[in-house]
Length: 187
Image (cartoon, rainbow, N blue to C red; front, side, top):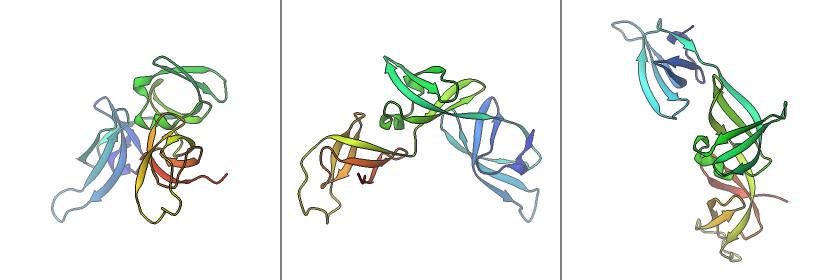
């Protein structure tokens, strides 16, 4: 058991049948009354963020979320197949489990598969990926001073806003959390 007084950022625990992760915490000792812990927590499965105050002596069951490195192999209809990089076992995961950031994942890319008590609830792509531009309007030489962006389609089919000087065939670096263009890849 873990007490609310021991909460730290990243700690996962079970409460009311839900798996929650501490995002922010603050120990509050008011001048009058008992101390309490103010916690901003995220439901690991649904992603919902809530805030709540806890008595520091409240006890909760720790939740162990397994993060396993796996390689994305291919998709077949609504099933996406991943391979355990250690045992080479294949695991099919339904498309509904994959987040919006999965649109930046290509075949053979390593991802983290998150599960709780054997049930997969999320797939985390790498934070940054390099993808090739397959379709965009032609760029203009010398048009680099403005912050004007144009849409570009990358090899996975996702659309990203890029600067005007990016051309078809360029490789770009993308932040998968925000879907934003970071820089043109060297090489």
